[in-house]
Image (cartoon, rainbow, N blue to C red; front, top):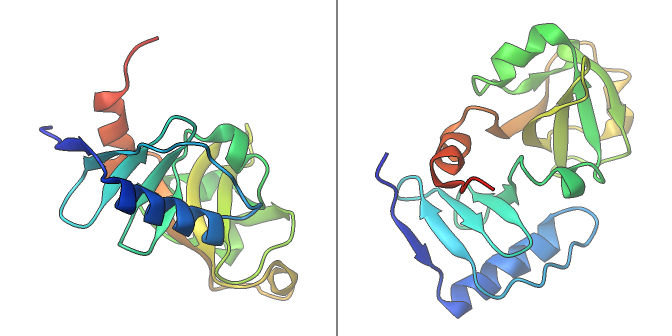
Length: 165
């Protein structure tokens, strides 16, 4: 996979950090000044700073990369059953019947982690489509829009650029 990689100009890096500060839960403050951009295609990129990794889905949508375990472990999460894993890891949205429980409170539009129930491993990052307080009353329907998941193009690109320790 021939990926184009370059450092973002300071103005663009600053804009990305502003999006992260305003849209990611928990008011994250990353110290990174320089951001490496690894292009997946014309619109999407993997963004790598000194202290964070993110996925740029569009010009205005930037979500945490799944390898940010520390950060993702501190935000609200949906926990899914074993039967939903393969669908979510193929890009499907999170449906209410596959949800076992949720951790923390969130509103529609919030970025949340998606974990599997067996080992509590992160498998996706998504945007809540309904607030957490509405999940109890739901029996069907889409609860989370899947934005980034294990095995997606961002994940595969990271595997090709990750340097062995």
